[in-house]
Image 1 (spheres, helix red, strand yellow):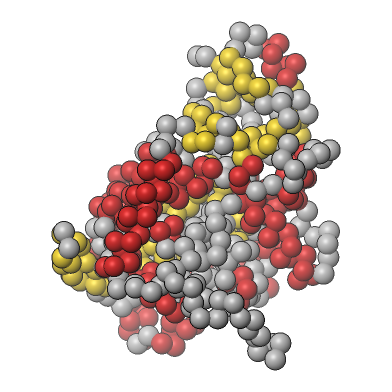
Image 2 (image 1 turned 45 degrees about the vertical axis):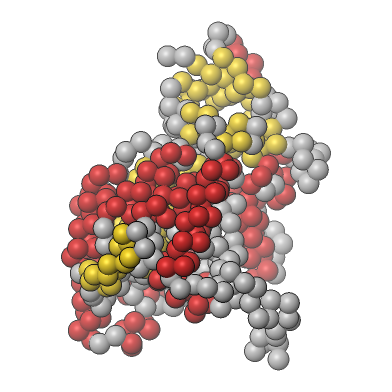
Length: 480
C-alpha cells in the first residue's frame, strides 16, 4: 500500500489528549490515517512515501455539520423576512414543485459548498420546515444521493414521513404538467426505509430516519385521534431506524417536546434532536440519562426565539454537536461562522467572555458531531486507523496572520474560504481551494436553472425581490 505524507502543518488532532503538534507529519494509506506525529517522525518511518508540503497551514479533522436541509440551497433568501411565505414556499417546493433534477442540482451545489468550506460530513434533511419531506417516491432521494456522491463528501441524508394527518398531496412533473396524488404515512415510511436499505453505507453516504417533532401546539391544534396517530407514527419510524441501526432524528425541539419524546420512547444513543431550545432541568437530565444527542444551531432563527442550553447540556454529560441549519434564509454551511456564533451566543447569555472556549467549540464541530452520528470510530479526530478526513487551513491570510497561536486564531478568525485542501477517505477532493474534478460553474448554472423552474411551478413570482422593510429599522416589542 502506498503512503502519502502531509508534512509541516500544525496538526490539531482532536484525539483524547487533544494533542496539537507543531511541524507535524500525517501519513495516509488507502482510505485511512496510518500515522500522526512530528514531521521528523513521519519522514523517518516512511522514507519513500510521496509528500505534500503543508508548511504554514493548520490541519484539522474534517468539520461535521449535524443539521442542515437539502433543498434549501436553491431557495436561500427567497421570501426573506417573511417566515410564513418562506414556510409556504418550502412546502410547495418540496411537495408539488420539485423534480429529481431539482434535488440532484441542489445536492451538488450544497455538497460543493460544504467541500469548499472544509465540511467533510454533514446531515441533510430531505426537505424543509420541520415536517415537509420529499418522501413520496424514492426517485428524489436517489437523485439527491447521486448528486452528493458526484462531489464526494460524506453525507447523512435524513428522510421520513410528514407529520399526521395523512394523506399528503404531492405532485410529479412530466414536461410542463403536474400530476397530483395523495400519499399515505405507510407509503412515506416505505419510501424512507427503501432509501435507507439502498443507500446506507454506500461509499461515503449514510441514511437517517426522521419523524417531525411533536410539540404542545400540535396536541392543541390537531384532533385527538390524529394526534394519537402522530404519536404512534413517530414510534413506528423510530423503531424502523432502530431495526436498521440508523440514527433517528427530529427537527425543532423546544419547551416540553423532549419530555414528550421521552414518554413515547423515542430517546436513546442513536437519537439526534435539533435546536432543543428552552429546555427545563428535568429535560436536560432526561437527555443525559438516555444518551440522546443534540444538534445545536446557534445561527438559526430558533436560537433567536429561544435558547439552546448547550453549555448546561454539556456540563450534564450530554453530547452537543454543532449544526448550521443551512442554507437559508440568512446562513451558509460555513462551520467557522457557526463556531464563532456559538461562542458569542452563550457568552452574551451569561455575560462571561471566557465561557465556551475555542477548543470546546471545535470539539462540537468534530468529535461531538462524529459521536452524534455514531461515527466516532471512523471520523472526528486525526488518529491512526481512522478515516483520512482532514482539511488544511491557510494561516497567511490577513485576517488570520500572524499565526502566533494558529489553532486559536483559526477558530476565532477563519472562515470557510480559508480552507485550502480537503481529503475525504484518503481522496483529495479540494486542492488550492478548488474542487478536484468538479466543474463548479456547471454546478452553479444547473442550480440556477432548477431554482427558476421550481419558482415558476410553485407560483413564486416576486419572492426573489427585496421585501418591503428591507432598509427599515424595525423595533421589536421589547424595545418599544
